[in-house]
Length: 84
Image 1 (tube, one colour):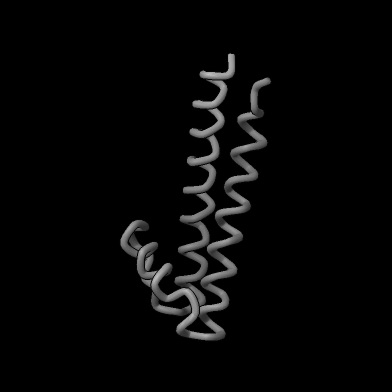
Image 2 (cartoon, one colour):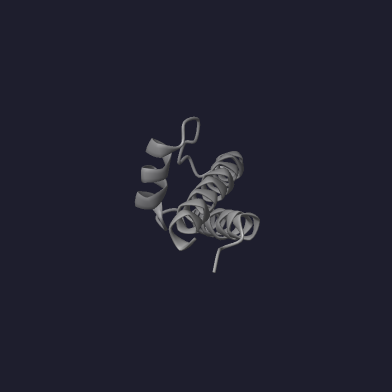
């Protein structure tokens, strides 16, 4: 059985983008929450700074959506190569 490349790409993008949005949004409300995670993400995503501003939440979430989509597509493609 093969995986749907499109479905897994969308699912991974929504899950990773949503997770990042929740953590960075919680960091806006409670500043120490998720600070270490956001610092790590700022070292991985160029242009994103864990500043705790609404703009940084948007930029980081867009990066996470793109990153999740690429990761999901790659996972589905590799899985389908071995499942066939």
